[in-house]
Amino acid sequence: MTARDEVTVRDRLRRALLAFQAGQEHLLAAHRKLKGLPAAEVEAFWAGPGLRMEQGLLAASAEVDAAFKGFSAAGLVADAADRHRVTEARRHLTDGG
Image (tube, rainbow, N blue to C red; front, side, top):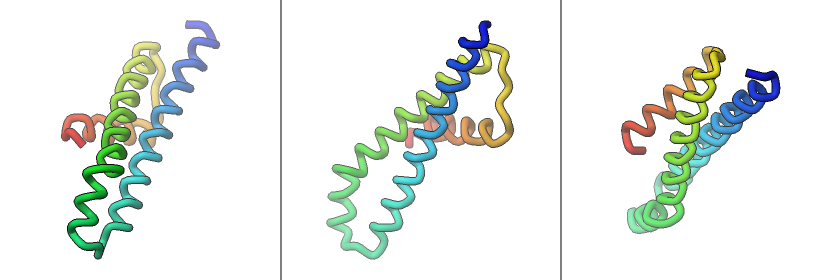
């Protein structure tokens, strides 16, 4: 593997992890904003924008999984924080969101 290839693989994983983390933060913020609202408003949110947010997080989770597989196949080793985030993404995928 060339140095350029390694940079590409590392960058893909980094971008995937950042996207996944941002998605998690957006969903958490949405949950917080919805607390105390009428049930009809909450349901409307999760049927529209919330559903798109969840789908985006699932897509980000799948990209983390794919990027990490490429990262590992290249013989690279992730640090503990990145491995933890990969585990969270994979758990999100297997739980179906």
